[in-house]
Amino acid sequence: MNCWHCDRPAHGTCVFCGRAVCKEHARTLPGILQIYHTRQGRHKALVVADALYCGLCQLLDDPVELEHLE
Ligand SMILES: [Zn+2]
Ligand SMILES: [Zn+2]
Image (tube, rainbow, N blue to C red; front, side):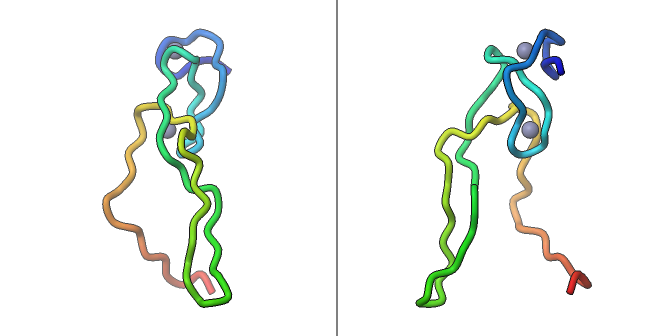
């Protein structure tokens, strides 16, 4: 797979959208690895400080509510 930006061989893929990027064009962003809740009923997230990010995809400001999935 080649880099989305420059079409040279990629070194990894964006954890958010899956685009491939080379080292030169890779960016990092904190990324959530897993969300769990504690025995006290509180939600916590395991976060990777420098998850690989393509620099292109955008996170929406508000979480999207999913319906009819149950
Ligand atoms: Zn590149
Ligand atoms: Zn991306």
